[in-house]
Image (tube, rainbow, N blue to C red):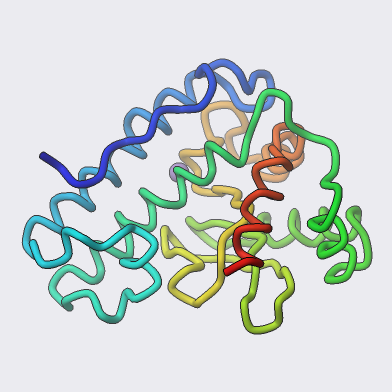
Amino acid sequence: MPKFELPPLPYDYNALEPHIDEQTMRLHHDKHHQAYTNGLNAALEKHPELQEWSIERLLQYINAVPEDIRGAVNFHGGGYYNHAIFWENMSPQGGGEPSGTLADAINQAFGGFSQFKEQFSAAAGGVQGSGWAWLVYNPLTKGVQIQTMPNQTSPLTLGLVPLLGLDVWEHAYYLKYQNRRPEYIQAWWNVVNWDDVAKRYEQARQG
Ligand code: MN3
C-alpha cells in the first residue's frame, strides 16, 4: 500500500477553460502529478522509518531525510505537494482580488494588489528553466513575500509556508501557449481561488 496517493482534481479537467485547457490538465494531473507521487513513494520504500512523516514534515526537515533519498524526496515530494496546492489554488469561479486579512497583508507587503500582481507575474516570467513562483508566509517577519523556487523544491525547505503557487514548468502551459509564458501567467490570474489562498494564510498565521 503506497503511503501517498494522487489527490483528485477538485473540479473537471475542462473546468478552467479557456484559461487552462483540458488536455493540459489531464496530462498535468494524471501523468505528471502521478509520477511525482510514485517517485515519492518509491523513495520512501527504502526508509520505512519515515512512514509516519507527513509530507510537510519531510519537506520542512529535508536535511533530516537520509542522504540516499534526500534528492528524490526534495524533487518528487516537492512535486507531490506543490501540485496538490496548485489544483486547490485554482477554481472555475476564481479570479478577482483577495479580501480581508490576506488583502491587508498583500497591501502591506507590496503597496497594493496591482503592484503585487505585477511583481508576481514578473517573478514567474523570470524563472529560468523549470520552477515555480510562490506567494509565501514568512513566520519570521509575520508577513507575505514572493519567492521563486527551482524545479520542484518546496518553499517549506526554506521555512516558508506556501500560500499561492504558479507552476511555470513548460508542461504546465506549452500545449496551449507554446513559448508564450507571459500569456499563460496573465490567463492564470482569472482562475486564482482567493478563498483557498486566504484559508492557507489564516492557517499559516496561526502556526
Ligand atoms: Mn507541474
